[in-house]
Length: 143
Image (cartoon, rainbow, N blue to C red):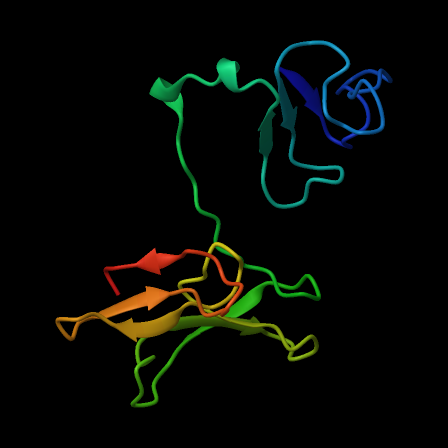
């Protein structure tokens, strides 16, 4: 794979990473790009695969990110709901400095919204997308 820290040049050289401005293909060096931590990559090491045939399902690991930074870039504060409501015990994140107004109740949907508590037919709880009608298909049946 090709490695970069700035998203523009190959690590340790001045050669351009991408073939053109669309960033749809690497200039050369294989089907994958590794964006190393540092430079413009602040939080996660990124792996981008441009050729699906290059992915071996034997080694594929799925990761679901949890947001830990608010809209102003500061680490979020983590609290739990203590009010006697359907959300009691749920974790939520908020801006620790109270400057940007960021709030997110976990679990979060695929679309980035806070999931809503819903009731199963048997009376049990589950989480579904909280953004209707254009929301995602998020369901967490183990609510």
